[in-house]
Picture 1: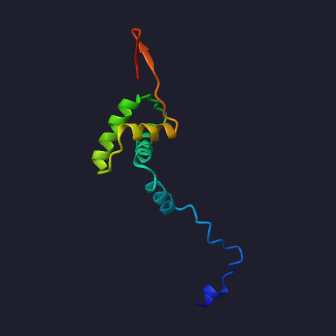
Picture 2: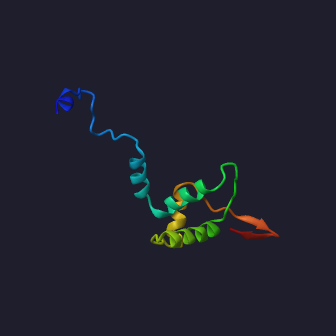
Picture 3: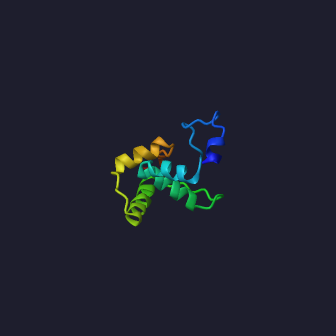
Length: 101
């Protein structure tokens, strides 16, 4: 008790939560699951490997991830909106004169 009473708390700010692993885990757990999926998917890839996926393929990977982890599924439109919120956009590619997404 003597030790605790002798501590100088003038610079203590209870609003500043240290950036610990527990804080990061709690913040990550609060994210919508499409965003958590993207974090898991991106971190599971090799750092120097760049692969462009269509939103359709990405959504299929998202469905597999949700099934494996027991996560609640978002609809295709909502998941695509969440993907767009973090900068993953649909790109149209022309192959043999036909548009593909």
